[in-house]
Every structure is written in C-alpha cells, then in structure tokens.
Amino acid sequence: MTQRIEIAPSILAADFSCLGEEIRTVERGGAAMLHVDVMDGHFVPNISIGVPVVTSLRKATRLPLDVHLMIENPELYIQAFAEAGASMISIHEEATPHLDRALSMIREYGCQAGAVINPATPVAALSEVFGKVDLVLVMSVNPGFGGQKFIPGALGKIRELKRIRESYNYSFRIEVDGGVVQDNVADLVRAGAEILVAGTSIFHTPDAAEAVRAMKETADGALTQKV
Ligand code: DX5
Ligand code: ZN
Image 1 (spheres, rainbow, N blue to C red):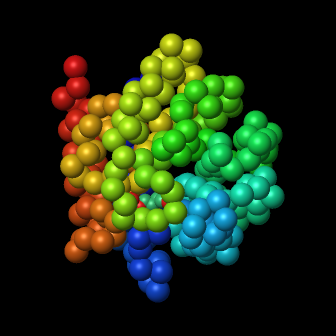
Image 2 (cartoon, rainbow, N blue to C red):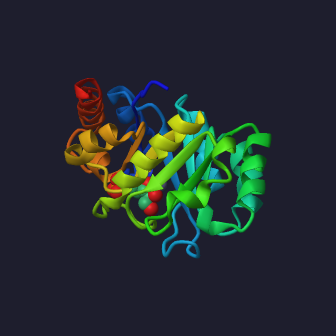
C-alpha cells in the first residue's frame, strides 16, 4: 500500500467566531480534510462541539469531515453525525463495549469507520476489528485538550500498525492525533502515519495556510527520503 500523506487541521484550535474564514485559510494551504473533535465532558474532561457544527461545516466546505467522537455511548450519536455530513466517524475503543457493532453502524450510515486508541491502550486491543475499519487513529496525547505535548510511545504503535497491515493485507489508513508539530512530522511519516491531525501547530500560527503547506512539504520530504 503506497503511503500518501494528508494533513487534517483540527478546528478545535481555530477561532470559532470566524470558523468559515479559518476553514478557507487551511483549504488554501492544501488541507486534505477537516478534523472535528467532539467531546462530551464524560469520556474526556472537556466539552467542545456537536452535531449542529458539523451541519454548518458541511455547508461551508467540500473537504471531507473527519469526526473524532470523544464521547461515551458513541452508538447513540452515529446516525446524527452521519446525517449531519460526517465523511469519517472515529470512535474510541475505550468508549464502548460494543466496538464491533458501532463500527458496522458507521459504515451502514455511509461513512468511513475509524477506531481510536488512547495512549494507554495497546494496538492489540483492535485486533478483532482491523478488517472492518477504514482508519486506525493513534492518540499521541490523552484526549480532551489541544496544545499538549506529544507522547513518543505513539511512534511504536504506528510502526506496529503498519507491520500488521502489511502482514495481513488490511486496508486501513493510519492516523495520528495530538501534539503533532513540524519537528515530529518526519518521524511520524517514517513510522507509517498517513493522516496527520494538527490543531495548535496550524491555527496558532501567524499564517495557518502556510503552516499546512509547510507540514505537508516536510511530510512528503520524509517520505521520499525513506529507504
Ligand atoms: C485532542 C484532540 C485533538 C486536538 C489536537 O483531544 O483529539 O484533535 O485538537 O490538538 P493539538 O494539535 O493542538 O495537539
Ligand atoms: Zn482529535
């Protein structure tokens, strides 16, 4: 499977008072999708945004919407997010005892299905669902907040996922989320990451379009340097 890099700006770090403008800026920089962080104040100790924002985003951009559900009982909300216009819906392995059923639901509603693992969760926790996911999202921070420091253990998990995918011919893409900055992009790409989620390092800069462009350039560079 050829590795193709996509940058997914996380709108959690954007200025919500002018979200439309923020989106146009990252579109201009070459963002491949928008990462939308949904938090319920239970699964993670923070509250962010919900279905109405996805509905508005769907009207404001043609970019795929990568919806990351950091919520308990994600099954209850899959239909609503799918109907609001999500392209991909990712749910945490830790958030439901019925991961298999929830992933099937996501596909039944016409979205790509993603499974997410927290820093303390091993890759092996997903071994029974590798065949039914379009994405595996490795958290490289403990979810709940933007602007945290990258946890290096994520690199080993990304390598492991890549190895598993090759050995068993799975087709999921590998995504990483949390503390992704210019300085660790090359290592992440060499490990096997394909979708790079970045909030702070894109929106909290003077020029978010340039930040996306520079991150993609660094990532593509690391790809070609690979042996
Ligand atoms: C963390 C979220 C991330 C967050 C990343 O709970 O899932 O998507 O927005 O933000 P940065 O890039 O600032 O670590
Ligand atoms: Zn996220």
